[in-house]
Every structure is written in C-alpha cells, then in structure tokens.
Length: 295
Length: 295
DNA sequence: TTGTAGGCGTTATCAA
DNA sequence: TTGATAACGCCTACAA
Image (cartoon, rainbow over all chains, first blue to last red; front, top):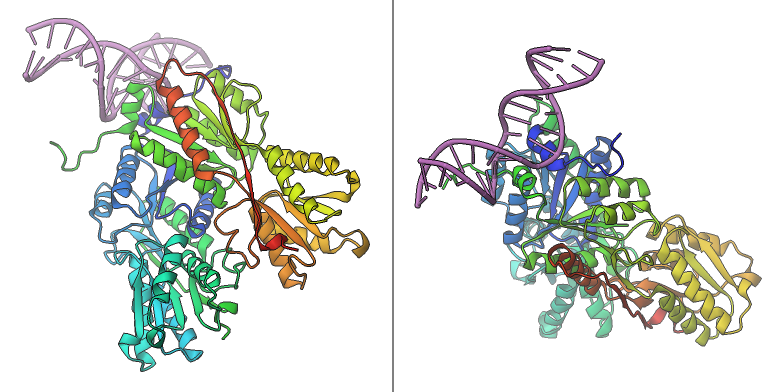
C-alpha cells in the first residue's frame, strides 16, 4: 500500500476512462432554498451509486451558465442536471449533440431531445389565482421576472387563464416585473406597488417565487400595510421559510427533493442504460393556504 | 477552428498542466443560506480570475466530507475552502501535507498550518447572552448541536463566560443539545423545552444558528407560546430570513459574503504567490436586536 | 502469477 | 514558422 502520501490522479483516470465520476448540477440561484432542496434530492440518489454531485451557480446569467456548461463538457461529466436560464438556449442543443446525458430541471423540454423533470407551472399559476379569486379579489398583481425565465412566463400564463376563466377584465391583473427572483427585488416591488394610486392598487399579489413574496411581505410590514387585510400574498415553491414568515405565506408547493431525485435517476439511467428513452416527467403542484391570504 | 463539434478535454489538460482551474468549497449544509452567501462571496472573487467555484455539501457528515476532500485532492484543484465538520480532522493535515492551498472557513485554525477566515464565535456567544441578561433573564437555554462542531462549542463557551461574568449560577444556563443545526431540530428542541417543568423552564433561548431559532419559533407559535413575552429567542448568523420571520429574530450577524471573498482571496494567493504566508483572519460579529427579544 | 507496453488528449520542447 | 515528439498518470491487455 502506497497509502502513505500517494493519491491517484483523477485527471489521468478520467482521461483513460473517458468520463468522470461526477454529476454537474447547475442552478439559477444557490441562495434560493428551493434549489438547495433539489440538490439534496439529487445528492441522495447519486451518492448511493458512488457518484458525486457538484453544484454550480449560474445566478441566472447566461454567460456564467455557458461557462459552467463548457467546463462540465470539458470535464466529460457523467451527466448534467440544469435549470436553464433561457429555455431555448443552444447550449442545451450542444449538450444533446455531444451525447452528454442531460436532464432539464424545473423546466419542460418541448423538444424531446432530453429528459426533463418539471412541475406544472401553468397549473400552479392557475391554483394561485383561483385561490385569490375565490376570496373575492378583482384587482391582482403578478410579481416576478425577468420575463425570459420560463417559470415566470408559465406561472403568469396560468394566472391569466384562470383570470379569464373567472370573467375578470384582463387589465385588472397587473404584471409588476422584477429583474430577479430575490428578496431584495420583492421589497423593491413592494415600493412600486405602493406607488399605484389607491383606486387602482391591487389588494392581492401573486409572486413568482417565495423569495419575492417574502420581500414583498417585509416591505408591507415595514410600511404599515396589513397582510392579509390590506394586501393578500401568494408565493410559489413553499420553501421551508414560507411557513415561518412574519405572516405565514400561502404558497404553491412543489415537490423539491423529489424533483432532484427523479432528475438524478433519469440522468444516471441515460448514462448507464443503453435502452434509455427520454422522458418528460411532470409533477403536480399543490396550493398550501396560510395566513397571508386569510382575508 | 474546429469549433464545430470539438471540445478540448479538460482531463488531459489538467494531466499535462498538473492542476485544475477550479476551487472546491465544502460546506456543512448547502441548505443553510449562511453558506450559500459565503459561496457567493467566494464566487465573486474567483470568477474575476477565471476560476470556477464548485460547491460540495458535507451535510456535517465526516464520511462525506472525507470523500469530497479525497475527490478534490485527486482532481488536483487549485485550492480548497472548507468549513470542516471536526476541527481536528486529519484530513486537514493531509491537505496541508500535500501542499494543497486550503482555507478554513468559519473556523479558526489553531495549528497555523493553513489560513483561516472566521468570525469570533466566543464573542458572538457573549453578545447574545449579554443581550438577554440585560433584559433581565436569569434562566436561559442554549440550543444547538452536535457538540463536535466548533461553532456550537465556541458560542456556548462565550455564552458561559458572559453568564459567569453576570454572576449567574452556572446551572441556570441549560444546554439543549440538538443533532443538527436545522429548522426541524429547532422545532424538536421546542418540544423538549416545553417539557421542562414551568418552575425551571427558561424564558429565553440562545440558538446556535438561525435555522434552529426559526424552528424554535415555529414550535412556539404553533403551541401558543408567545414570543418574546413567554420566550425570548436569539439566533445566530442573521440570514436574510431572520428579519422576515413570524417574529423578527434578534440575531448575531456575521459578514457572510466577506467571509467567502476573503477566503477565496487567501486561497488564490497561496496558489499563485510564492511569498504567501498563512493568515488567520478574525472578523467581529455584531448583535442585531429585533422583536424576538423586545420583552 | 507478475510484469510491461501502449494509448487516452494536451502542451511544451526541440528539430527542421 | 511549422511540425513532429515526448511526457503527464492511469488502466487494460497481452506476454512472459
């Protein structure tokens, strides 16, 4: 045993073997607990097969995403799990063309060149709006952005469909677009909401994720707006902190760890099973009602 | 240009070059926003130098930590940033012996074989207890664990020192030891706290981190315990969600991103500067008082 | 059984 | 300037 001081060289091993023993997971925002929960799900599956998950943060920046994918490609990873910044990105086509097992996470892939594991965002948007409409709201703000994120668009689409189905005028569902899905942007959106004349100001907000909802809530509380009396709030993801918020947050729950587990299973299947066929897995979201909408 | 389809092989490059272009960051818990903030700080510095940060989750499990360090060593990474599970771990000695630039994050390294970037946890513990003592508390619980985590021990030590300095009896500062620093464990600790006979039950809790504090708060609220009237709570880290909690949390703030930035700077200095000398950087924590202790 | 040669893809070096 | 060559360390296959 040359245990004393000798460590094999993984680069040489990989060069010889043609591929590495790792799985790359690229997320939009490491600071968002939604994604770290997905990561833990993926880790659980990978670890059982002796594979290591390495986490990369694109920060919703296509440039950084591109660099990370480049590195992962150069590293000849076993597979890539990614929540892409832009769904049509040609980076994804490149991965497919190179035969790198790839699973889109939290995004459906219309193109069927790759597996995907997602939650029905259109349905999620519908659930949120139906919940608010049920509570008598006729003036609602949708808070989220940027627009190029599929999640943001799909949830808005679902919201609009439910809004139309309730026979409410389209212009009574305002979109307050944010530049990111963060707590800080949520606070900022709160300020913009407050700037709308009282007569036209929405008394309810559906936020594209919980971070934005928490920011909006913070702004409301610090400026004396009562939740839910003056402003009802619905979030999205149902992260662990949603239930513990100043006013516990009504939110659309996604099966976070399951998303990660399923994605890891699919990518490892593609990497090891010759008979692999691409699958588009779609989970169903569920609305969890809490105090932030108990008007 | 063989751009069309050709991607260089990073393994071969590394094999030839002797080292990779990545920095490994191993944290105790990816799901803890404290660590993701540290990660973002490190990324900012690394990115500016064309280096990629890959994030690994040890989950406070020495086994997993060991496997990750093994992989990082085999990968001949530029450097390692790590919040070790056990401060005396020989894995750290091995890294030093192999000459792999390493910076201990959120942990001081007594041994001076490596750089470290930490926040004075003993002082943090003192600040928390002084704050509670100032508010008249004479029966306090320290909630956190496991005991082998340096953070847990140091914060307790600071707490005990401040407690003794206030001339309070040692046994009036109870330690409720948890098996992890998570929201779930905080809830569980709440149940244990509630099980203590009223006469001896602490009316204040100092939690080893904010996740535990948020869990404790959740348990209190759901079981009708009023915060801060019946139970005052102090957290640690001041993560973004602390201020937005059901009852905004008093917490000991650490400079999270700065910790990550400084760690990355030190490790890259060690990796590239022959005249590098190890440094032990110690930042100062700061108590942020909020509603959870406004008794 | 034990041992050795070759090649994976890069890049540095040396020759033409 | 251009082009061939060797070496990085590992693993596998084949030879002794």
